[in-house]
Length: 388
Image 1 (tube, one colour):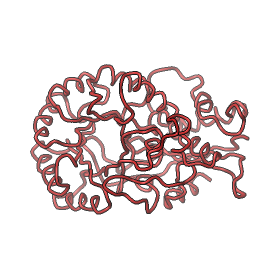
Image 2 (cartoon, rainbow, N blue to C red):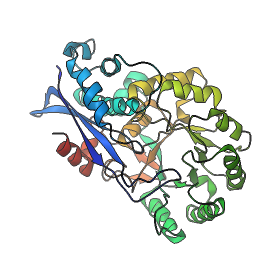
Image 3 (cartoon, rainbow, N blue to C red):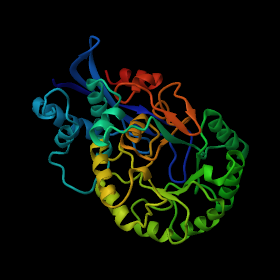
């Protein structure tokens, strides 16, 4: 058994939307295909992966460092002890060879993209959905057959008025979501409050609305927003300040008693640990949003979960960023608290398998081998086309 090829390409996910910090008009993503010599129904098993939105395609890092390291390694060194499947930890170690610790940068995104494809291949070779394989290996066999998901939207875009925003949120409710997310910080506080109140009219209560500042605020502004948001009892107040400003996050906790969320822009177990140590996050109410596809992949995410448990945090307080099928499998297999969903944006990568039913913000897990990309028609077509 061996990996016979690894293909990589970039795909556009450009969209005329913005959050408080960036616009997505030139955004793209890497797509990777890990080809094996294992045959199923007369075809080689291929694992696919991509990086989450918010970071650009990693062409150079993949082509110059991480893919060559795998392909140059002894094929047997990348297998499990039984020799009947790939070993994600050993492949991860091959990619990280000769890399210094710290300064994670964009390499975490490149490795996470390949790691996703490796796990897809591993589960397909085993003939199981990835979430069941993860539950068997790391969660005592316990699977969440349904996973909480919320609809992430509410972006700013030209000409989007309050009526258009409300129509967007009504669409999410019609799709089966009961919790939605709205971007804030891209306009004045007064304008954002109008938008928040307009969405609450649609979703029924503040507890059904999360808001996301995308790291825009300094401490003073973060506190001003906290005071203005407090009366609404929101689902959470997300990433008020710079993701590495743990002191800001810790101080903000003194001014906002309702749930907060952060972590989507922390790309290693060590950075996640610093958040837990120094960020004032509260394990009884706050949410952690680490995204494996941006942070060295599932191999690293497993280390992060172990670190959280050692520090008194339940995996149920994790609700990964990204809105993709990989995080959905992780949530179901490792017992997380939920997963983001992108019903409209970042297509074809956002969202789950075609025709997946959503009821009261819960998605039922499909019985699909691997991550399940093959049941998401436009996505698998793109993956097969650009990684040949």
